[in-house]
Amino acid sequence: MKVQSDAHPSHGPVAPHPPNSEAVRPATVVPVPFNRPFMVGTELGYIQQAHARLQLAGDGEFTERCSRWLEQRLGCRKALLTHSCTAALEMAAILADIQAGDEVVMPSFTFVSTANAFVLRGAVPVFVDIRPDTLNLDENLLEAAITERTRAIVVVHYAGVPCEMDTVMAIAERHGLLVIEDAAQALLSRYRGRPAGSIGHLAALSFHETKNVMSGEGGALLINDERMVRRAQHIREKGTNRTDFVAGRVDRYTWIDIGSSYLPGELIAAFLWGQLEAADSITERRMAIWQHYHLAFAELERESRVGRPVVPGDCLPNGHLYPLMLPANVDRGNWLEQLALRGVGAVSHYVPLHSSPAGRRLGRAAGAMHHTERLAERLVRLPLWLGIESELPRVVDAVRELLP
Ligand SMILES: *Cc1c(COP(=O)(O)O)cnc(C)c1O
Image 1 (cartoon, rainbow, N blue to C red):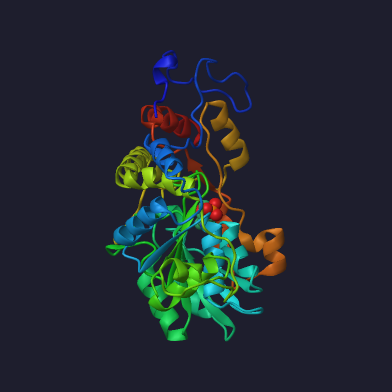
Image 2: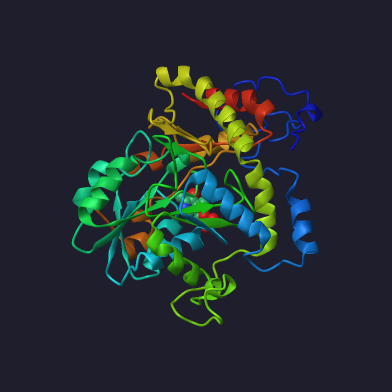
């Protein structure tokens, strides 16, 4: 992808201006959007191949290639492509055998699907506060949130920075709970050398357009517990044993379990294969952009004018997103508007689930949610996409000028 920075050579430093003034940037400056999907260039060729083979339904050759890639690169026992991360989380909730009234512990600072997948099975999401450094679920609050109704813990690797998984797994084992990783943002991230998604019993990936590697909509369920593999295949195939039939294990297939249609068509898998082949270089380039921001804001953080993301020493992130913490006295809505007037698209993230209309009705908070409430109000995500590189100084300057 090419950024047309040479098409508008006239923009120089933007002069400081009083808040609320209009016409703050030259009309020739092309805005930097918050997100722009990256095309590798091979996707259409692979779609054409699937088309030529007359393979359009799910589980064809490209689905097979993507699944093997995920299994080999992430070291999970089985990877099943789904039509979204939401679908993979719903499958995880069925596999976890969640029953009405069961409790599932999770952060409040996450996307709605983390909770919805379990609420659909009748579970009560029990929200715990996040750590102020990583914005991930605070593992030290887990045990206090566990009751005799708790069945599972869902961790979310926010911004592609893995949670403190050794502690989470030890607590889960002590209480006989399943651990499900919402690894939607964490493809190719590592925790103590281990890939995100390979540590819990189950994990869900997203290939939504906004993620590092994408197929428009898409996802995968990763299964690390051998005992759940067969059932996962049944659930994904409408509750039938069609996978066993295709593998020659049974001579006809029939309805044997609950389930739904969770698999993507082959055209999506063909597109995804083009992206997965480039996943390492995509991750590398995103990390370079992430590092650029991180260095550029180091001084501002020392001056306490902004907060940068924290990556624990034993975590290797994947450059999924760059969150900045605005100072407490800044009105974020106004700040984002001012940034947009300077041609830079940035956005907030997550209304905490415990305070959302559905979350208040369907879940409950375990303890105070101080960090979640305070940080969710101050967080902004800077634009981070392949091709933005030449525009980074402009983004950094705009942010710097707008910070008190
Ligand atoms: C993107 C995302 C999802 C949902 O992914 P879809 O593929 O759009 O269903 C779920 N959880 C988290 C943390 C996400 O970032």
